[in-house]
Each structure stands twice: as structure tokens, then as C-alpha cells.
Length: 399
Image 1 (spheres, one colour):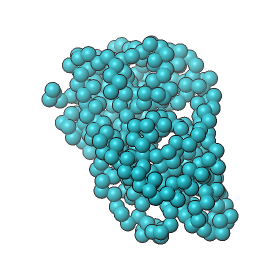
Image 2 (cartoon, rainbow, N blue to C red):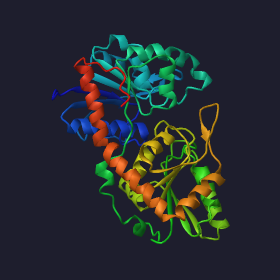
Image 3 (cartoon, rainbow, N blue to C red):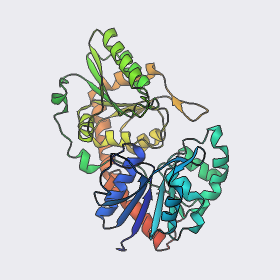
């Protein structure tokens, strides 16, 4: 159908804030606007955000923080009134365990439009403080018209299956064609990284959970000669692991007698995309993820990757064959860990074998072009929204 819809997306943070949830909602929202729909995003008010419309997406901002377990602060009733009085065809609550979703839960049955939840991993599923939250969650999930998961294998979809919840669709994450097909090729020149030196890259905020220490130690151990490891990430309030990363970086340089360098950057987005393109190998050592966007971005930039089995990383490799997963230990608290020596061997294998790198790069890039561009992903959201709005049968489509 060509019916244009009034769509509401809710998410804790949105552009210019940077992060996985922000990126997914931004990309899907902007693609749906391009397709003619009216998209509003309800999100936290940020001092650094000047405009109320970004690339056609209307923003409705609220001074609110917290979640059900930690408690809420701010304009709680104003937000709930906004939801109750909203003139929308459909709402997507993106990511559980934060205010923009949690404040909708108590009024779901009173909202006059179709409702979808994308849980985005249930990162606190094993956290004792969240026991009662997850006891109530199955009944709440049933109040939604539909659920969206990013994986067939991760803990949030397993949780749904355990509770006989089946009104869901799996829609994977992706990477932007617009960004990656037009990446700048002068990154090495501008950052004075010689063309003949292997460049390894990891991208993730300095939260302490993105596996920077594992990646740095694996890089230190890998016998690959002169080389550069680039860590790109912003620093959350409260400094995170940045200081620790700086110390480790200096140590690598000293131990390798200046043959290896670890460079820490937080550049503008076009430089992040250019760095992916310039890199020979992408490394990912994160302790907890839902469906890591960075692996899709590596494939979009034709960069092979080595990753731990965090989130649905193994599944992404199965879909696209764009990289290698190393043996990973899953902890009872839901985080994962891997051995830096094992990651170091995987780095050596790929840096020493350009043919293998090329094969992975080509396979990943082809799979991305065929299935994982945001343009294609957004059409899947659009089809699902239209089916719900038109009252079509949306029982589980394991597409």
C-alpha cells in the first residue's frame, strides 16, 4: 500500500548523542521520512541539540532520566500525556530498561494506536535488581501488538520464546550506504599512518565494557611487526576507561620499542567512516552487546573483522561470512570474555594472509549490499508497520 503513516519512535537518546540505539533509530527514522512518512522521535532533551527537526525527523524532547528500577526524574506526566494524546498510527519503543519505554508500560492498554517494542537485548536480564521487572515483562510484551528483535539467537528473543510469546519479527541491524559508499580515502595521509603499515581498528565508547583492554593486549601480543592500532571512541561522563587505555597505549609503545603504536581518537563521524575504510582489520572485544552495529559497518567498508562472541556476533558471521569469531567464555552475569592470546593468534592469521582478508572483505561487503543497508532494513520496518496499521496478520515471520 502507499498509505503514509504517522509514526512515533521513542528512544532514550537521539542525535547528536552517539551510540547504537541512537544510530538505529536515527537511520530508520530518516529512511522512513524519505519514503514519505511523518516520523516523530520522543527523546531526552539535550543542551547541545539546537534544532527540533533533524533531516525531516520531528523531535519531541523531555527532561527525564531513569527507569522503573532506578526511579524516574523529570517531566514524567508530561511524557505520558503526550503518549495518551498522540495522533499516531504506530509507536515503536526502542530498547527496554530506560524511561522512554518504561514510562509507556503502565499506560500501554490506554494508547489508541498500534504499539511495537524492540527490547534491544535486555542487558539487565541477569541483574538481581531487575528480577521483578522481568517477572512482569512477559505480560507487558503481550500488550504490544508486535515485537522486533535484531537476532534469532540472543537473550531477548530466547526470553520471548521461553514465555510462549510469538508475535515478533526479526529485523537485523545495518550500516549506511550513503556514508560507506562515499568514504574519504585520505585518512592515513591526514593522520600520518604510512600506507605499508598494518592498521587495526576498534570503535566503541570508553565505557570500560567495549573490550579495549582485551584488544590492546591482543595487539601487543600479535607478532605482526610494525603496526598501528586505532581506538575510536567518545568518553562518557565520569571518564570511563580512557585513562587506562592511555596508559596501556604507552606501555605497548615502550615494550615494542616504538614499532607498535596505539592511537586514541574521537574524531567527527566522517573520519570514523574513513578510518574503517583505511583499516586492514577491525577488532571487537566488547563484553556486552545486543547486535553490534560496528560489525555491519566493518562489512560496509570492506574491512574483515575479528570479534568475540558478544551479542549476536556469531550469527552475523553466519549470515555474512565477513569475519572470524574467537572462542569466548560467557559469564553468569551475561557478559563475555576472551583470551588476548587467542585474539592475537587470530590477528596474526589474518594480517599474514592477505588472501583470507580479501575473501572475508568481499563476502561481508556483498552480504551488506544485498541485505544490510539501512535503506533495505527500513523497508522491512515499513512493511511491518503497514501490516499492523492495515490489520493484516503479523504472526511470527522468521524471515
